[in-house]
Picture 1 (cartoon, one colour):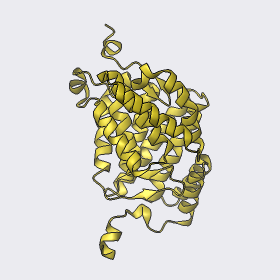
Picture 2 (tube, rainbow, N blue to C red):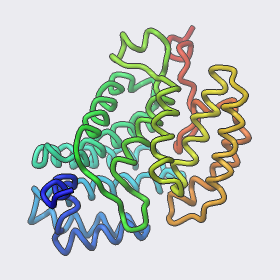
Picture 3 (cartoon, rainbow, N blue to C red):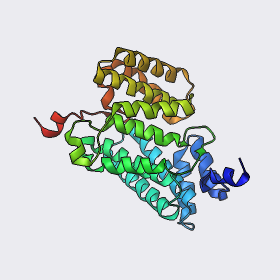
Picture 4 (spheres, rainbow, N blue to C red):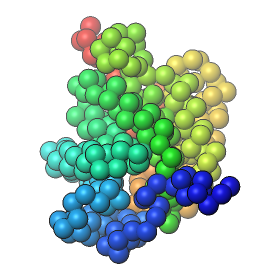
Length: 280
């Protein structure tokens, strides 16, 4: 591959970063999203249009919300963080429309609003989330944090895998939101993540969850058995950061509640059936 083509394969996020952005990146990779957010917020006060800083701040703020959720902090404290992350990621798209990272993190923020408020109350955002992540996959970025806890396109595969599992798949959903769930697509995207990153705990866990969900929906005992194996593999990989530790802690509950696998998220379990939506 020529040098020109090699450089074209990487987004500006992989090129030279401002020292403050480098520091924020290191703080995030080493499991301190609060410090990363503080560093990047201070930098963006004087460099408000730096896309590398914008999407990284969105990511750090999102992960702060994840840690708050695992600590039992109320939705009212977390939702403003997700709204801020969404706005930052959207601005990253405005200043760098050819990078996929802004589309990725706006979709992540919207998705977490949905699981926090209740998926059935946020069905109108489903097609927006899907559109953002599918658009992200059309971009040429390649990125991995130093500890591998955040990657591109791996994070997009993970997002779409969870989306197609959690999004309702009843026929009326297509009319309500323009899209619908698809457990086979969910498994497909999680397999892509695991193939690219075979030691990433979240990917192993989510592939396991999607396969057990597929087994429940399609009466497929083999899919369930495979799903259990992936969950055990996830437990066997040493945790590298706080999110890995949360996933390790939740896997025993996932295994104990296999019948509810389709409704699992880090925020908890939610009935997304058509009867729950219509009240009938």
